[in-house]
Image (tube, helix red, strand yellow):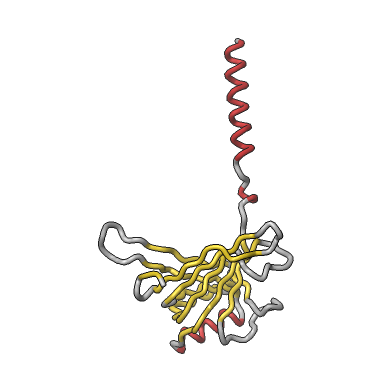
Length: 178
């Protein structure tokens, strides 16, 4: 009986230790996404003129084996219905190219976003490839294809100020770093 009690105590302590180390889903950092497009009017309620976005996603695709080029692709921006959706649709239908677009991510719920975002991407020479409007959900999925992307990160210094960290640029058309 004593051996069984010790085994049970051991299992309970291992389980408790695991749950103490594991993060709750709500503990993971989430971000508010904002964007701005060079030459566009202020299209949102923010003081800085940036527009809130629901999501921004893209991926790096690395070829298997020695053939093919690495690529950055599948750029999707999720924006609310309203002026941003209309501006993207108009740009797409007119076949115009957006000179630059900056997408930034700030820690969710920050009362006042830092002047430098912990994560940002600048897209250049951006073709709007699709605009999928969802009236029921109140959202618009915007497909984008830039010719270049620059990615920036920042870290918080002990003083609390955000300072530059890593960055890189990729020429999507040429399939190489810049």
